[in-house]
Image (cartoon, rainbow, N blue to C red; front, side):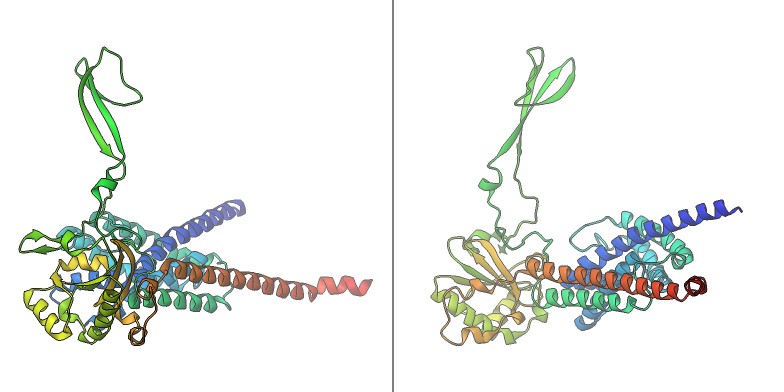
Length: 430
């Protein structure tokens, strides 16, 4: 093989390696990020698998596994993207795919769950597409195991540990914050700022109208601005609402009747106590809930508890908590979609979701002394802003490390160049 052919081949390998790093790196980053951002959702998905396979595993172990898997995916993807740990990272990723590929193949053929949960609630992918995706990823990783170490990355070997450490802190902070408070980004049907109950009048206020006409046995659709001539015969009119909300409908049933509009009060502020898994609920939060109920009641609002369980659970909660607010049963999956946590609180401002928080993230001491006005309304947590600051901080530090790394390499190169014998010989001859 000639030198020109070798150079051309090396160029194609370099292009293939960097293309593979970007593609696989971004897939792993996205997969790990959306799982970590909503660890509760990933925990519920793992629970779903364990229930199907009849494994009894403690919630603490499930949480640890969820945090470990999501963190590994994100960190490995980011390290691959920038070309760090060129030998180890593709091998570790391939080992992970050695487990995930048969698993997703099993899920495709047996269909035990509706979706694998690879991208959380951010992107629902069919089981078949997921399996084919993993075949492609595995093939590319085999290529990277062979060639990735032959192409240098963005950072020098002596400074890679710092980017790794920053990545670990970033994804763990995001995961822990979302688990203990609420996900920093909400990809579900009831995000903060939306109305809990869909308003059909508002949803269908604007309508696009299509007109169906027929001519010579052929039907065609026309808009109101482009109607056909008199040779066409009118068939029917179709109304298409512009603003119809495509989301899960929130409902509360009692004896088969939908009582949602009776329970959710859109005329005043309301505090919802959400307990999706009653058998895991902690009664120690009853003091906080009663204090918050007293506060919001004194300020013209109300409190309602929604429990995923049965009528006996409702009676037990009323007895344990000494609640003077109503308690209703609701579908557990719907409650999990509304708010994350074993016991969580949702604040409604005249039917609009003002904030969501786990009960454990609220300090009961706030309500022990005479409280100021709007105390409950001000408990909101701006997860998106928090995430933006963390991401900018991580990106900024990566940029600074990159500049320092390149500067250090340049200084070393110039120092080495000055010591070169030919340069010293030229200097002495002068």
